[in-house]
Every structure is written in C-alpha cells, then in structure tokens.
Length: 200
Length: 409
Image (cartoon, rainbow over all chains, first blue to last red; front, side, top):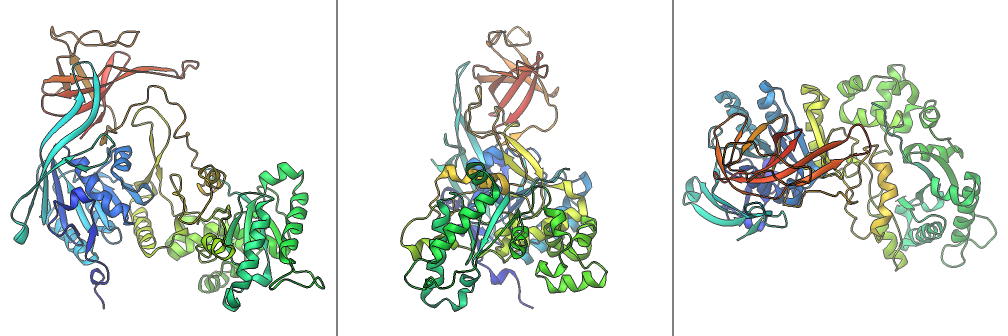
C-alpha cells in the first residue's frame, strides 16, 4: 500500500499575508492548526482562503454562524465549500468522516471531545493529509502544531453616531512546536476595506 | 421537493466528425469548428460538447423562427452548408454529409433523441427515456446487475428509490439513476473538456461559445470526486440535510444574502467563473446558467437593494434569536424614530441578559423597509455598534426590540 499523503504535495498554499505566519509558508498537510482570539472566525476564513482558491475543498463543522459573504470576501471559493450541521453528539463523527476526503476541515468544537475521539480525528487527518483548522475562543481541545492567535484588534471607521465599520487592524501571533517554537508576529488588516486580508 | 427541469436542447451530431483519434491534422476538428460557427448564426449559445456533437437551447431560436421544425430545418441547412464547403475534407457535392438532430431535456436524453431523430416535447423526457435499455448508461457493470435484478430499462431503474440506489450502487449508481430519471444532464466522460479553446485554435479566431461543464460532477477532478464521496458518506450517516452549500443572492442584510441549500451531487452553485479561453461575454452566461443551476432560484445579486449594508461583511451571522438591550446615559432604552434616527445616544448594551458593556462607537441607523405594499411588510433598522471590549456587532431593531443580527468576529 502506498501512503496517500505522500502522493500529493506536502503543503496547502496560503495567501501571502497568512503565509508570513506559517513556518513552512503553507499549511502542512496532516496537521492541526488553531485560530483563537477576538476575530478567530475571520482569521480562520483568511487561512482557509488560500487552499480554497487553489482548488481544495473546504468543509465546516460547528460553524453554523459562519458569514458566507465574509468568507467569499476573504477569497474562499463557495463552489467548493460545504457547511456541515450536526446533532450535538455527532460532530466528532462528522469531522472524522470529512478529513477522509476534504483537504481543509474548519471545526468549531461545540465542547471538548473525548480524548479517544480527538486522537482518531487527528490520526485520520494525518493519514489522509487533511488540515484540521480548529476555531476557538481560547485553546481547549486538539493538540495543534500551530497556534494562530489574534492578540490585538482595532476596528476603524466607526465614530459616535457616524461612519461605518471599514477595516480592522489586528496583530496575529503564530506559535508552533519544535523549529517553529519562536513566535512570529504579523500585523494584518482583517478585513481590509475590500473585505480581503492584507498585510498592514 | 419538486425537481427542477433541465434545459431543453437541440443536439446536432455529425457522425463523420466524431472520431478524434483518426483525425489527421485536425481536419475534422476544423470542419466541426465551421459547423459550430455556422450554428452560432442560428443561436449564440452553441455548446460544443465533444468533437462532432454540439447543442443549443431550443427555446430562444423557436421564438425567433416560429416552430421547432423550422429551427431544425435552419440548423440542418446551416450545418450542411458548413460541411459541404469546398476545400479540405469537404464533400464534392456528390453525396451529402449525414447529420442527426434530436430535441430533449439535457444532453443525455438529447443524444438518444438524436439517435432516433425525435423531438421530445417539454416535460416528456422521463417518459421518453423509460423504454431505453439500461446499457445506454454506458456502465456495463451497473447494467449487468440491473438486468439481473430484472430492471432492463431506464424506466424500471428510475423507479427505484434514490436512497436504495445510493446504498447499493454508491455515487456512480446515483448519478446513473439521476440520468435515468431525467434529472441530470449528461453521462460523465461524454463531454470532452476544452472544446471551445480547441475550436478557437483551429479556426484561428474567436468563437462565441459555451465551454463549461454543467453540474458538480462535470469537473470530475480527483479532488471533487473524493470530496463528493465523503459528503455522500456523511449524508448517509447524518441525513441529507446535514450537508449544505451556500448560495449567495441579492438582499439587504447578511442573513438575506446567503441561503443554504442541501448539498446533492448534482447541485451547482454561484455564477460560473468564465472559463479560460471562452470568449463569451459575461451577459451570455446567464441563459445556460439557469439550466445548469438545477432550479436553485435566486434573487438577482446586483439589482438595487436600497438600504443594503456596505462591506465588509460580518464574519458571523447569528442563528436564532439573540436579544440585546441598548440603553442611553439615563438608562432609557434607545429606539429608532419613524424618520430613521436614534432616539438617544447609546451608552451601554447587554447581549442575551449578559454583562453590560459600554458602547464606544455606533453608526447612523440603516432603515429597512421591505414589501411596504404587502401584509408581510417589515419595518426595521440596522445599526453597527462597537463596544469597549473591541467587539463590533450588527444590531437590528424591529417592533422596538433589538437583537444581534451578526458579529464582526
């Protein structure tokens, strides 16, 4: 038998402003990446936009509230986006099935999974070369190879009774394990006035 | 659920141009290019499906030429003239080239219709397909099993419940089943990709052509297949409604502008990106889309939506009800006047009965007045609010109650 992951490229591409945060410049297949902090949803979309725009399929679990319009703005290809809704107890099963054939699975865990279920999902993602992108307010589940945290965020454009939200300047810090242990910081517009992610 | 109807197509087949393997120096392809070009004069939406085979929607030309028979006659004449052009490969006028025509809904049925020279009336495609042997599905394995089960015709196969077909035959089976029921357009592998650019290349000039594979499976990249299989497996496990796909449409608020549709292997979404090499103008894509979108009716994206929220769009759109209290400095609830102004400056808010958070910035309200002419009318106003914790929200007030419509997470 031939390992499936080896037959494909090792990295999923990322948009340039996001690539600057990733130790390999792309998302390593088979890895777990976590987005946390105020603006984690936007950050996850921006991270997912790279692979999606390059032709990968993307599925979400536990993200019933995802703003699809915003996702499209960040560059996700809606033609290859599936939103999975599950009963409360079934999100682990759904995630395990999805990592089998979807390159990028974006998961907002409704609660902690049993460790055994977590291990199954992580092992399966590794075997199949899928990237599991976990979105949480604060780290709580799944051992991640890479932690992306929105440290500071500042909205621009809105005043007292005037203006409108135009863009948000954020500081994202990436912390990895091993060689990527040294934190990397990046200033981003997330989103910029165009709805995209841009390096600040 | 009522199943959408496929576009009714006139399929034109030039058998002598069909064998691309024996096509020395692209002579056949060049002749086919001329045929397609000639047909473009009858109808601008000619779709080159594979060498020697092209389709065009029958509806528009019929309106122009009067009857379907008249369209067929026009087409026959145009194709014949293109084939009989003197020059390389052209006939010497001694014998005329054979062409076949057929009309039915979807490419698959139209191919069969052309085989027998039939014009299948609108809505009759399933009935037309029923007596054909299952062998026409071009899946010998499947056909053998079906025949052994006593289902030798498409009609018999079509009557099996879709869920059973999915369980027994998997994705290949369900695709064949949809074809047999007249719900899907074409056999996978029938279409030859990139016909448009190839024809443009042999002709040396641009052609107004459709060159896009309709349907989710049309792409048949390995990744699409794999993803499709996983999604089907998930639907089998959690129910079909568990997997949805977003469709963008026109509307004012973030929730109006996206609709979730249950995913099915045949669903295609959002306007197709114009394919590389296709020279068709953007306006030309629409008629085809209507058909290939398989009935996902859609409010137009661009027409005027007064009061529409400006970008950027919020990252989270609230599902369900999330009430908010908004108070002014003296603790009085803030409202919106009939003229669309805030009754007072908001000072603090509390989401879902939670802690009070100071408001640091807010927009002027966007009034929403929808369907004022009908009993279903709706008056509301939207407000962007930034609180001291750095969270930006989109609030909406309706019947004096505020709720969180979306969060700019």
